[in-house]
Length: 300
Ligand SMILES: NC(=O)c1ccc[n+]([C@@H]2O[C@H](COP(=O)([O-])OP(=O)(O)OC[C@H]3O[C@@H](n4cnc5c(N)ncnc54)[C@H](OP(=O)(O)O)[C@@H]3O)[C@@H](O)[C@H]2O)c1
Picture 1 (tube, rainbow, N blue to C red):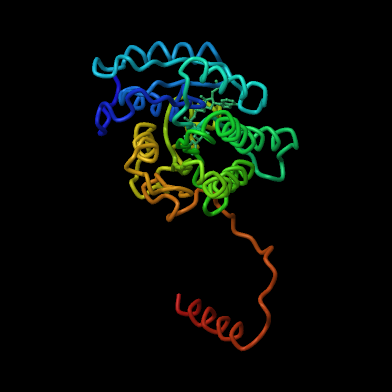
Picture 2: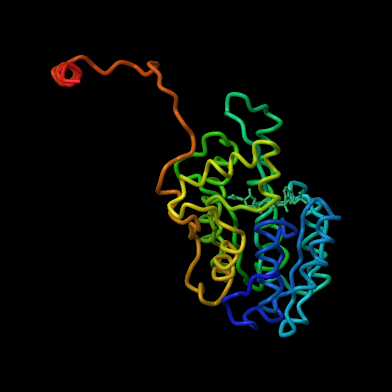
């Protein structure tokens, strides 16, 4: 069952959007909402079969009022420059315009930094950072430079670093910065570009990415979320629609956190008790603290 959008049903009537990773999770929710609002949507990612199944499901859920809106699956690995060129060219051939780009496609795996291979590191950087750059550049050069448009990049809660997934933390932080650079470089084309930084957002596909540790990862996040529950893709989508809409006409280069305050609260990573830290410089204050601790212990 499709979640009903809070926005006006013809808000994006006759507009055209590309949503990378639009066949699952957050991207699918964004695509569903855009379609509800009358937007034509091209969903793009590597697994064509899954994209086609998602397109069929999305099509079934387009309300009567938005029926002219079309959803089209196009295979594209965002890491591959040629495939990104083809995605943009095919969208223009099909619809003759591109109003919106949502860079949502991406992924990572869980590993301490010390155990990451160069191949694994590069794969995450290539997808989450370079893939986003390639999509932005191609859409700009092929359409938005002359016609304007709006871009939203999906990043992550990496504001206190991202221990356990340092590669994606580095890539998302770089996209946050890329967003700011492009907001300035492309302002004179009428292009607005912003990011959305989700907290921990549950979908079956998101959980399955982490294989057998997936359920534990998501479960462990709950106490660290002020809402004391996980977020859902349909809670990210309205933020993206808002940033694409005329309601955000004066917003560019910004990142909107959609995380129920998670980024302000506890981190999941636990630091074990240890004595590895360098000693504090010896002086009257270390002496005073030692006395207080000794006194406290003697009263126990
Ligand atoms: N769920 C969360 O808690 C959370 C939090 C912060 C940020 N994010 C980010 O939000 C985005 C959506 O994630 P999700 O939670 O909705 O998980 P998801 O369902 O696994 O979505 C990831 C999507 O990215 C696509 N993708 C991956 N690599 C790609 C590539 N090289 N080229 C094109 N598409 C690619 C996947 O499709 P194919 O496999 O078909 O390529 C898939 O549709 C991801 O970038 C994710 O890292 C998620």
